[in-house]
Length: 451
Image 1: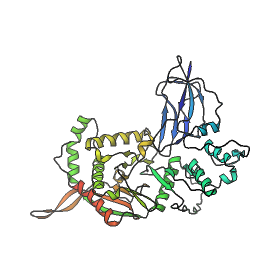
Image 2 (image 1 turned 90 degrees about the horizontal axis):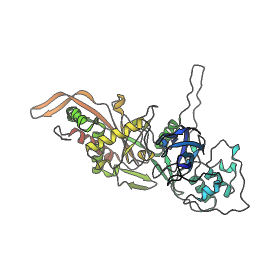
Image 3 (image 1 turned 30 degrees about the horizontal axis):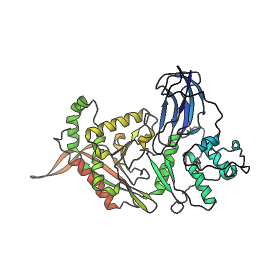
Image 4 (image 1 turned 180 degrees about the vertical axis):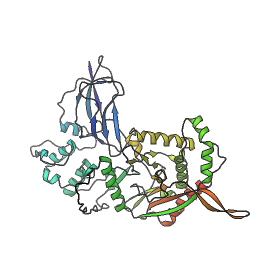
């Protein structure tokens, strides 16, 4: 028999940790190749961790609810046969927290001396990871002091960067730039990267919650993890960016007629349904190329112009929440490629099969409020982006058409587009011209276009 160490795999460039939601397999359970062993949650998505080997689970190294780091050994699986390249010697429990800290790249080795304070963390209601506890102990930071440090992680959790920043300020040193990942909202939002520096950071805006009376007929429902993240992200976005929304009504008759004409043959040829979403994404990507300053983010007084066009699209989850998977380099895909990307991401989002990296890196977000029967909306910006486009329901309406024989009234397929944008860096002229350009691409659809 051999033993295999199951580690928390790398899940994206900026994903360093995950919370264990539940163990699907229990010690003693048989495991087939690719069986789901446990479910985890990052700041972005819930994911399943499959087993790369067949065997029997003999030990869980972390309980549910604990935050683990990428690369941590999380379970031991007993496999058949002798030692292989993937099998390892039986695992012992002699590895200490400090040894795990020492093995993490980028953490300065702290001397072992007799001045280290032993802190009892069991008396705190706040969760601290082993890494944070170890650094606090080495720096002689008491639990009372630790509890006062504001955390930027999920539910206010204190992470390594928060603690190192605090220590630097306390010691009068330079505060290192930290990257904070928040979860996007619905349209759930995707990647939020906030650069914190001593010179540019601002005190968070807090408000005292109003008191709500509850009587016997009321039902109290606790927010789930994702809803809490969405709530925090929405409030943060509104306090960060002065929102302005511009509206345009578009005549999308040609687009609708073209899609009706090609949808059956397209599905038969590509084994994919073509919806309006990839058409919207294509128009947005074209408009971003025309107006690249809509594809930016803000860092203090700096405007960061994005080199890639990565468009997030809202997708509904079975729980009722929304998530925003990202189509990377959308401008480099043709309509067939966009259709396949949209269907793949939307399908896996509904089945909770998205990878954390697939909800990150967005530079612009598209949400289809028309899928809920709404004609228009005023969406909230997905930080750190500066604009989000909502497309409304397509309705048949009487409209005035200009012809060579004069104006006529005809039944047309009409749709509202609404663009919310960050007025710190996007003026009304840019926001208005951009949403108008998207509408122009949709209105100018070629009825004879080949796909």
